[in-house]
Length: 151
Image (cartoon, rainbow, N blue to C red):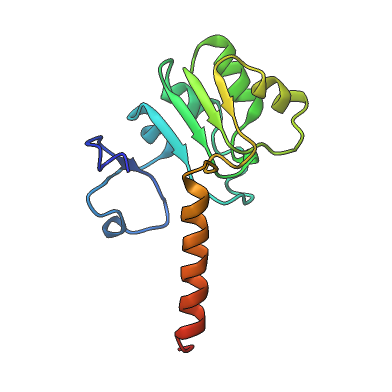
């Protein structure tokens, strides 16, 4: 979507080949990606490898005007490092649609209450415009499943 608006898009994925990224510029590390963007959007599953993936090094590279967006899983971001970076002004702000625990308490509660954090309860997509689209999409998927014979 950012590309359609004329913004350059950079990506990092250590597992996909270069051709998987089409017109987008691939970088070689998450730290390099964070250092080359204004908005870092995280889209990974939670695994042992990705737990705490966004830590102090990535946040430092993102910089004081940087914006972290996490819609993946809460534990992908090191909450202590994020809170410290926000408090120090080392990162501009964060948008969190996920937290490791609900309801937020401890570090998560401190992040949710931070003046430079926008937090939603993992329903950032929800709006009066999105609900009809979501229903149509679900109905189309069901129709396709019912009328398309299995392969």
